[in-house]
Length: 207
Image (cartoon, rainbow, N blue to C red; front, top):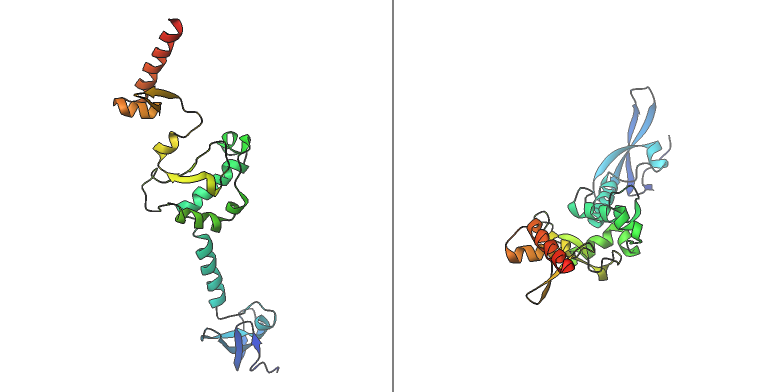
């Protein structure tokens, strides 16, 4: 019988022999009692120690999962979904919005291709995970620019809608307003605002 006492395997140090155990399929295994660096003890099969498949009492795997979650956050977090959608719009031609983003050459900066970097920027620059839906959205300041720290901000959907390249603008009381802003100023809905603006434009064209 090989003596593994005092030998170290990963975080485990062998402290005693626990006998030979027979598995349900009839395989005989030498079992060793091991003390982990974290202080816990566990019983491990000799072949698992030698081939490296068991390196700790379980704390190593737990620690790696915790580290990953700390860096990358849960995949079900709203911010993670925003990050995935941003990349999909730019790089997946199967995305319904690809033509307006990746199809126009808009890209995600190299820094933000790592979710940890994007998450860190988001929380330092106004992202609010408790905000109601539509009150904290990722917006590009320059609609022809890429997704990158210097060109992005967190705004409400109303502000974002006013920043789209598809907007029409009108001059009202010395201010340049989108149709949505004009409608709110006039206390009418956007459809009525478009009707009046289109009617005015036709009258101007027809004299």
